[in-house]
Image 1 (tube, rainbow, N blue to C red):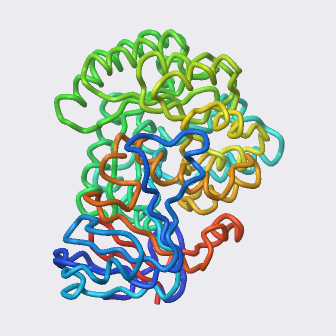
Image 2: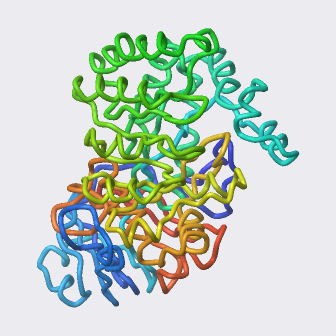
Length: 441
């Protein structure tokens, strides 16, 4: 193991160690899990009361064979397996062990901070006013044009370990700051390059984020270019799994959102939507009707929207970090969604304008204190439901036989303390696909 140098743009906490990736050992045994949260349950997103069931085992153990879970259960039963006698041992020393967080909505690749926007917001400017003044997404787009693909890849490469060190093992990364076709493709190529050496899994998404400045008076023309030039290029090169659209006042209309998503669906890409963040547009209901995997933000839902979500297979991904940072106070109606049988996920929405944090633990704190989710519901939303929000619930998000061995170890004895001690990093260790990739010593 080696001493990690401080990664840009965040200081590295003292005595942290990243563990270089090696070929997976045949067997790894994680012993003395004070609380083992398996999230074992139905093979689908969890709804309603199911979100409170963590499959908790006290004094548990996890046995890993190469990349996958071989057994997760009471320590005595796991240790009696013949494979356990040949395993390398990682002693959790009574800590909380759970599936690695799945951060299903981020804008982790961006050219620079937008601290000027932050100060303007403190002074009373709104999100829309900052955008009209030349800040916001357009400011990021201008800066991104001056960066090479290699520079962008290096920036993301240096950022991704921060997600890992907070317990995240899978992260979605969107384009959306390029805007122009060539710049969006440049972003997606940089994401693919960074993913090759990333210690965690990276899921790429093509995002229709805003209309470029030169198309401001003719947004329909940009929608056509996005549909007929950008989406085919992405499909041809395999640069993204999902297409997402920011449907809101001042960004993409409901009609243009439908056109983009319909083209993406016909092209074989999976769908996500930024829905009902600043205003209610009907995008969440549209997304449900089109079979989207998730509708994200959903801060301003109506009762009919919730019914539409509940009767579909869509996941509502809540992003309370943005509500905190923008000081809008419009937290998503988590209780109404959960009580209405809508599966809920949580994500950081890590981005320079409205949620500059890679810390999923902080998002759990906000979910509990501001949206009245229970700690158990928040863990479910950040693991198994997050995995389903990236169409990966069949391979990650829970510690069950045959799934990827994606594990986070928290330096706590009670999982409820993850959200309780807010703003802190409790992560002590991370295993990704059977490899120990991070330990705090």
